[in-house]
Image (tube, rainbow, N blue to C red; front, top):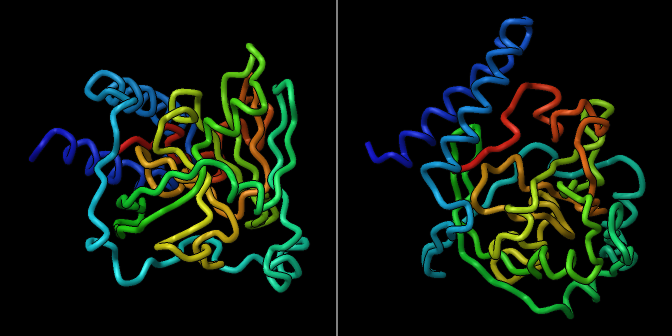
Length: 246
């Protein structure tokens, strides 16, 4: 088995047992140690600035399934969807010099990147899709990060079990050229099941990091006081790894 495949299999197997393991104090310590190993191993074995594989358009999957939230019913999302997301705004805020509030038209007018990549879900399925949107780095540069900013948090419109979904990455992944704010899937506006109208694509990480229904991008110095302090919805609730590199 190739080294990369071995790491992916081991990572998936580890996550599958997270729920039960995380219930004990010993389990929590083991999860923390294992996450540190996983993160260090990937940084040692792979250049995190390397590109994820890209495929020809002919490789696009005939159907790209949804996962997790597929039709949020909380807040004003249903009315936004009914209005074609005409009033949707994406905020860029937090530790920035110039906070932004962007309409979908603003997003569409920015320089665009199109990439055909494989989405790998922690549940074991994969699909290939063509994603289009501006690079996250373009938005961050326009907002001008403050020196103390260390992480980027993605705020979302969907709420699961009483908690708003969120995710986060460090600046290495935030500035990766394949990290984009996607608004098109296979040349069409994102379907609701896939995160309409905006979702983040972080092509070097597993699918749960690719936050859907994006409402805000927030620069922060620490993740400690956000949600449960683990850096993401599933990280807080189920012990998923914060760095989910593939």
